[in-house]
Length: 127
Length: 127
Length: 127
Image (cartoon, rainbow over all chains, first blue to last red):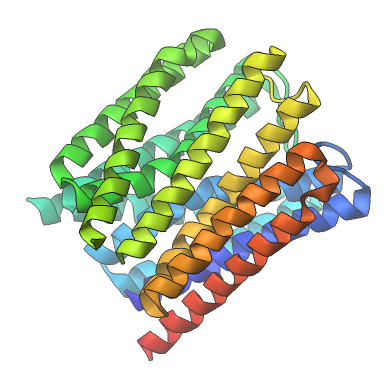
């Protein structure tokens, strides 16, 4: 399961990085805690990070169960693609929020694959 | 641990579904990103999903450690009840936010059971 | 891995406690769902909890992979320090949001240690 562990850590580093960039936007635009609204650039960075956290609670369990019950290397490869799709998502969201659909959609498709594979794999292993 | 894995994936699908419904509300009420306030129906769906994410970071570790250190099938059964309680929570929240207490409370009690069981189980196994 | 499991459950209890305190602030200041803004004291408690959830998706995977690939007891010790740093963070944030940096920074350093250790450990184990 090392490939799954490595991809997990890469996703964790990405989430950490996105959080760090929210802090930078806070400083840049003088958005003092606990406020979470303000300059559009801050709000975009904030929502990108939030959305990433929302997806992590889905991605990490699905990645591990796909890796364990279906195939570790294929799971790790899909996980890497997911992380890349989140970079595309972030890039397009920062430029223009309405253009975020592509990166988001690719990521959602990969996540669905991991979810369906993990669920079917666990059910088949149980029977 | 297959029953725990299956319940994990069901909770993951539920979270994914709740996120999807936020997107639908965004489109329906024209709430464009990064805005997170607007029509009451949108805000309810948004908060239901957020609260589910907040609980997932508690539920998933507690479910696995209860399943591992106490009992896998009982843990999976409690996990299923938790997922059902979240459907009740969502249903009542959408109708009337102040009525969300029942589904929320049942879920919190189940989560407490998994948490206490997981902690005591891990401590006893260590000693 | 019992020490890691125990620290995981302590972090989970802490997150549950922080969520509970948001509910108390909701009641105290009459902030009715789905609203997430209002009295400053409520917003602080709300953001403390949100930030804790955001960190849990990083902390839990990093804790386990550090514990598994590097050292379980050292990982558990670092995890305990992280939980304490979150108490400091909460305490200072509630008193004065701008003073939250110290608790936050200590926690971030510990998290970075777990992340880097977990990633390097997994890569070295794979090769």
